[in-house]
Image (cartoon, rainbow over all chains, first blue to last red; front, side, top):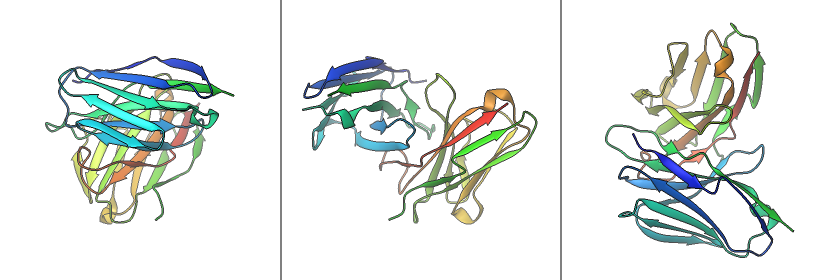
Length: 110
Length: 115
């Protein structure tokens, strides 16, 4: 069973700051997802990655398969980035669903 | 394209009653997943459909939960009889390929409160 740990659990930062959210997992995976959930809203998939790095706008996701670790970075953070960011992994091997971390609650203050 | 839609958005029922949640996936997505977040916990997998077939239902908590996907289109998740611990947010997601091969598209969730 994969254990997914995210850090920090809560993060408050000022607008413009560079944000890093970390995710580590215990068992090898096929893919890792970064998800975003705004208060009262649905879940949006930001990235799915299995190696290396992906970039979309101000968001960057990296993964180190050997170290079983991924990071989500937000450059030039903005109050609209305030949300819960969730890391989820897919281990395969007959278990079809994602295993989720508890999420990081991010608040960007103007 | 229309996203994943879930109905209702909120449901408040009494313990012992029955509730049916509905999910309409993105058209053409064969893979449909149900997930649940109970208060204070992480989101957990319930089950996975490929078209109308249950591929993996290892996450279903007990036999009070019944999921169907007639004709491989929309899916329903019925809870009968509901218990207090069933309260939470139920998310549906769909994808073209299986979890590790294509992104998941989530619905906005159904918030279920059992009193």
